Length: 383
Image (cartoon, rainbow, N blue to C red; front, side):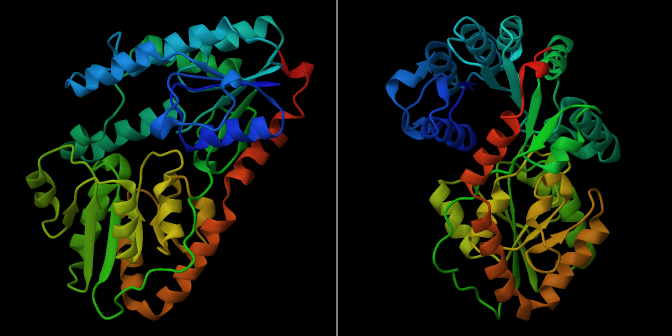
C-alpha cells in the first residue's frame, strides 16, 4: 500500500492518487484542501486533510501579503504537512512525497523500513541554480525577471537530504533526470495530455505566421532569446503573441522588441481558444521540469519550437511535431522560426501529427510508469 503526500492537488498527483485507488493500492492521500479546482475522486476515508495553514496562506494572499518565508508561506505549509504525515504512516509499505515536503516523512519511513519515492517536478536545485546564475551574468538586464531562487542554506540542505533518503526519484522529463547527481536511482514518467478535441481549429493560411509564447515573462523561459530572434528575423510575415504575467514594466519588454502582442493571463478555456488562433508554440526555456503548456499546445494542433530544457524533448519529432533548438541560441531559434514561415504548406500535416503526439501521452501511461518502477523496490532498497 502506498501513502501519497502533496500540499496541493494538481493534475499529476490527482492522476496518481486516483490510479492507486482504482488499483487497490492507495493507503491514504495527505493534502491540505480538496475542493473546487483541487477536488480529487477518492473515498473520504482515504483523504487526510490538513487545511488550516494552507487556508491562512490563501487568505493572506488575497490581502496582498506574499512573504513565502513567513509562517504563512508555502514552505511553512509544506513542512507542517510533512510533519503531520510523518506521524501517520499507517499500514503503508511505501511513501510517495514531493520536493520540499518529504524530509520528516522519509526519516520516519526509513526507521520503519518503508520504501521512499520522491517526485521532483523541476530540475534538481544544483542544476537550476547554476543555469540561472549563468543567465544573470549573460543578460544582466533580465536578471530581475529570472525568479532565481534565493533559498537559505537550510532549505537547500533539506532538498539535498530529501534526495539522499529517496529510494527512487520520479522525473517528468529527461532534462530533470539529467540534472540529478550521478548514481541516483530514477525513472522518467511523462505527464499526460489534456483531452484532444475531435477536430483541429481552422487557421488563416494567408495571413502572417502566428507564434505563441505562453508563460511568465521571464528569461527563465527564454523570452529574451525569443525577442533577440525576432530582431534577427525582422520579418513582417511573422507575429508573436506573448501570453503571460510581466515581471517588469511592459516598456522593459518593448525595449527588447516592440512589436509583440501582449495577452494577459486568462481562464484556461480562453487560453485554449487563443491557441486555436495561433500556428506554433515557442518556448526556448532555460530551466523547466515538464512545461505542460507544450502538451496543451499539441492537443490544439500547434507544433513546438522548444529547447530540451523545456522538458518536452520526447514530444518533438523533427520536422513533424516541431523542432528542438539549443538554449541561449537566438540565431538557431530565428532559423527555425523562418523555416515555419517558409513552409506554410507543411503546417496542416504538422497539426495532425501534433494532435497524435498529444493523444499518445496519457495519464494512464504516467501512472503505469511510476508503478512499474516502484514494484521492483524490495527490502534491499530500504537503507
